[in-house]
Image 1 (cartoon, rainbow, N blue to C red):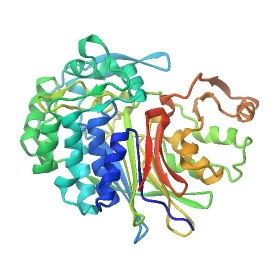
Image 2 (tube, rainbow, N blue to C red):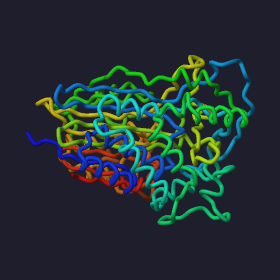
Image 3 (cartoon, rainbow, N blue to C red):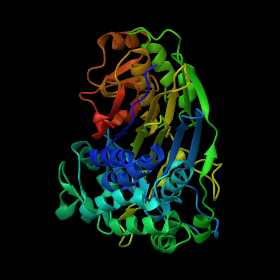
Image 4 (spheres, rainbow, N blue to C red):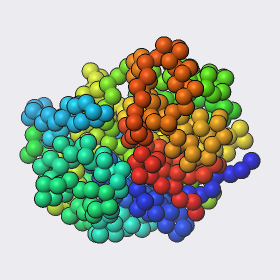
Length: 463
């Protein structure tokens, strides 16, 4: 059976090129994915950054073993019972409706991106750490062009991203950055250079950790030295679902993606499958705008590394002189539960996954942005590749539908036959005028090619 070609899929050309160059230099899928995610922290700062958190899924070709790592944000408060200041409420317009988010120092949870990338590299990388960080440091010295798709996200998220110190970066002179204009974060190269020399520890027990505590507390947050010193990357259980003769492997996420895939009907012919797929995808939660991004990498040996990271909307709290915006995850109300206590991980919709073929080899490595739409985007992409016989670029680019309660939100171009089946089954249909970043942002490398999502300015590059 055909194997997966080595390649990288990401949501910015600079991110994908960084990963590909590391593969060309003899790096593993882990080396390339870590380098690409660090590049994301420069080129995709409307979605992610060093101050965020995430998850990684790794497939080792020699053993066919799948590992999932959790380096998402943790709840602060291990140092003392310090009370946070009130968060800052901002209105973000998404899908034409205002949504209230909370940012500021009190919204900052303990970040996991530096620790997580360090652990992925320690386990599966082989290039020296400084060599893996160097490409991102180079990008940070020059800045990158903002893709049109990212500019549209920035327009939606401006109340958070262009807040405080972010105003000079994303809204210089009072005008939001537009597509193909330079995004440059002063000081970020300094942070990357220090990360290369001192390793991830600099953000936890080192110089930048002390600065992070001082900055967050000055802004009304509660992170303390013990919160940072105790942070650890965690291995989490790998769930499995059989789908179209393949096995899908991923962590259990907030949207129960693996359980959803397992619940799909055996007859997946179009257009009659639409109501059953909609039933499996039903989402009764709040529809929030997720600033998230994903990198998918496969190397020449067939190993795969998929990493999804996020800042939330970004707290608007920046590490002085370092160009690092901190996460706003404590301001994401639907992620807060009674079970959360200091030191505990927050919940997330993120679900980087790998699919193995009946022969046990890799078939697809994929992940997505899009908060509660992550599951929708991944399920539709896998249906396209594994059931409908589409290439990876075709499957990612085609129109999707997303379900909220009894309503199906359909992108422009969804097949009329499927919409008719849905309407006949009693679903309310809302047809969107365009393809929209609301519907997620998949990046995937598989036996049928590599691609990033056009909704997010994504690209796929093969070695």
